[in-house]
View 1 (cartoon, rainbow, N blue to C red):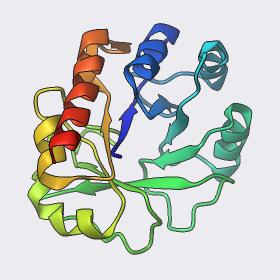
View 2 (cartoon, rainbow, N blue to C red):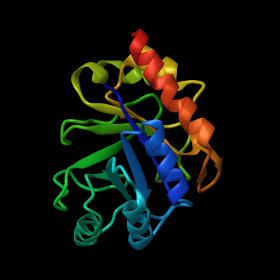
View 3 (tube, rainbow, N blue to C red):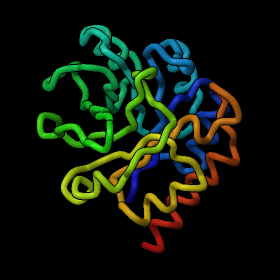
View 4 (spheres, rainbow, N blue to C red):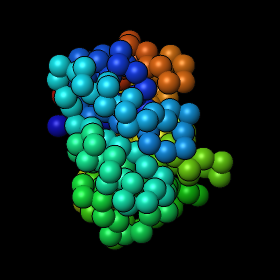
Length: 202
């Protein structure tokens, strides 16, 4: 089953309806981001959830000790690394390295464990870009690695991505927002429905 990650969660309501709609994972930004939250705010949200999905912490070039502290505080399931972290980065939890596709070139993936995430590169953004990229250039990887696709996904295009490439997972943040920091319930539901429908028809 394709993993669905709703990222950039900033409030309890968004977390609740993401989980209720069937998200497998929710992500919190602990980095320089418009969607940054404090570990304490994330814990307050998680403590109110009736069902706990897998929890992902997003970091950019943070010290391993600080990543470990946050991961232990929140019992994170996965650490998503968006910066220039070196292979072998260790903070006590599984990691998912985000690799940026630039000029149609997929960076080398051999130094990182599964899963990995492929996102679009942008000169002005180190985190998620919200921009699509040429998914076709990574087609060979989808057959050999556990790959999350990120970048510009939204309810209108995610079904095609799933049908065409059958990735390990899909990641969305801005594509299901009503405005920055606030998820739109219907967009979240539509996104997840599109994934599951395409998966069922594949």
